[in-house]
Length: 336
Image (cartoon, rainbow, N blue to C red):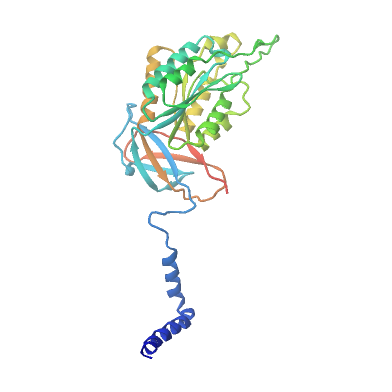
């Protein structure tokens, strides 16, 4: 009997508590529910993707600026100020990049220069833990080397590249000259971004050695740019052109490769440099190597939460400096 008399008050209290639970005041139940559903520490803005931007800053004398802090930057998306949620200064972050070699008919006399430039560029840029691949583009787009960190393998692939030009002459009789065909540069950019870089994380870049004239691509310049922006890929163009080739086919001063190269680079945060002598080639290597290796990484959660797939313009300003920021001009929002 002693045991039963000891358990009865406890049992009665439990039953009374169970009966009273449904009539507890609503705020008390809400607070208890909130505590149970509170997310773990560090979980922020669920469902909103952070936008990451790799930026290089040069001063008025075009020297790399390395000592800036988060407070020195301002980010605007479609004109609206954004809060910088993450910031880092990166010098030796691993790099994933592709080298795209123009092997069309217009490069017949300059292909050896392209191959030599590619070798020296790899010697300057390729670091341990980096990965690179090689495409050639002409009538087709060909993978010459898949991802590897071995400079020897990459150079063997580059040296296997050969000119592949149409058999038919690029000009017809009559007052209107037919443009050359078989330079699928935009297709090469699209394939490199979608098939090689889309699934990669971190810093990604394409290095184009070309005269930047495209003929025959299925994709347009705008679509190639969109693909690069959607995969967070920076495009650098080392322009090597045989201007005599285009003059010989009636282009003359109408050659416009430099304009296309500039658009590809500027919109993705890269640089286009056309070289016509040894000094300019070394300068191009130095500038691109510096910009690939010395960057600020800025991250923010957009105030515009719409998942409409539209292009958002990005502008980065410096608060205390008159330097120039080199970064991509925008990104595409995710789709619902």
